[in-house]
Image (cartoon, rainbow, N blue to C red; front, side):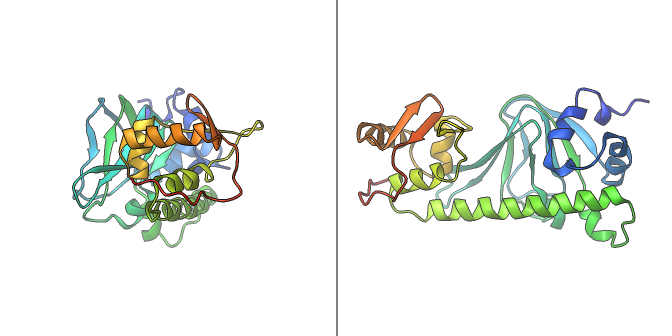
Length: 236
């Protein structure tokens, strides 16, 4: 019987996922079997995981988009990130198989997810397969990146002014050759990520453009001045 995980449609997705960096396609079958891989399909707006449920498996998005979010102390949803094809999520929580998930995962669109049991890497101290070792190295690198992202999120949420939150976020993005920054999600999701009201974000971006601090073109933004954060504070 044909393995649905190794469908030709999904091979290029795994090849672009950093968890599978430096691992040839010929090793996928054994590696995925070792990680007890399964594939599941979710309809738009259904939950992959609710807050409070056990977080047992990391996920690789094979197609579609998944949103990771949590609830504030006032039970408002705060978006952490959006994961698209080739992205993966939940690696830290899945390694420890936490019994009570602090986050929830929702299908923003119809999506197909590859789930991996990463805890097995901690249980097998005698890993002899070279590609299992490479996968472990890739996982460590991804956890380091996730830690950097989490620290950025904490810094952003620690800012009193909306403008400072915007500047911190924009300065975390990598500009293209012309100096433009691509916002990877909608303004609504960006507002959730920054922990502010969408209309307040829209107004502040308009003010910043009027003051010639930024230039906006759809989802692209160009910083006019990055030497320092503005002293003016705008209530969130």
